[in-house]
Amino acid sequence: MPTIKALPFDFRFEPASTALIVIDMQRDFIEPGGFGETLGNDVSRVSVIVPDVKRLIEGCRREGLTVIHTMECHRPDLSDLPDAKRNRGNPTLRIGDAGPMGRILIAGEAGTEIVTELAPLPGEIVIEKPGKGAFYATGLSQVLAERGITHLIFAGVTTEVCVQTTMREANDRGFNCLLVEEATASYFPEFKQAALEMIRAQGGIVGWTAHLADFLEGVNHG
Ligand code: C5J
Image (tube, rainbow, N blue to C red):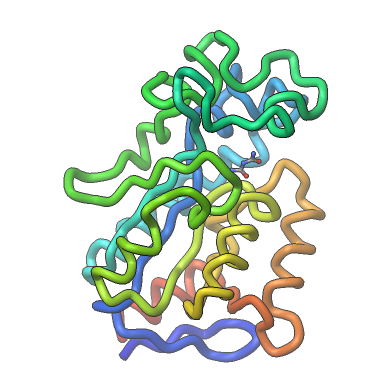
């Protein structure tokens, strides 16, 4: 059984009952011209993790973990987009507006796709989610139950928004969760750091954190 050097203490899991969940590595959050940039963010702060997320995905594929990708997106008629989300803040483009990569965060548009380097392989699970958490209004619980998944490894963007929300949802549902530090990012480095510390504080109140090198060492030699 792989044992990962992690905080607040070692994390042990069976690959057959563990899934990697890669949160929202979409062009709209990571590339210039997308939603992240319209909100005034510097997307280079999150694009920098793409090579490490790729190493993590490939390491998990090699060991036979279930690989799940999420995409934050909405229906073209915006029926799953509450006003409270669409009208928040003062972006140059709102969700559903036409931008340089198509309509912002709308299913099927170019900007909504996962970045090419991290594209899901045929057969991997892709969860489209209208909220921050990947359990809200999706089939994720059923997918995990059908596969007997008990442990979740997390990566993706942004650490303190969709990643942390999903980890908290998962923790409440009884999953053991670990977040890989180099495979997650925020537009605000101090928020990433705070989220990592919140997750592993108080004996791992939400879950564990580990460095990518320690995760790969543990999983590939477990
Ligand atoms: C937002 C995310 N909206 N993937 N999404 O920040 O974190």
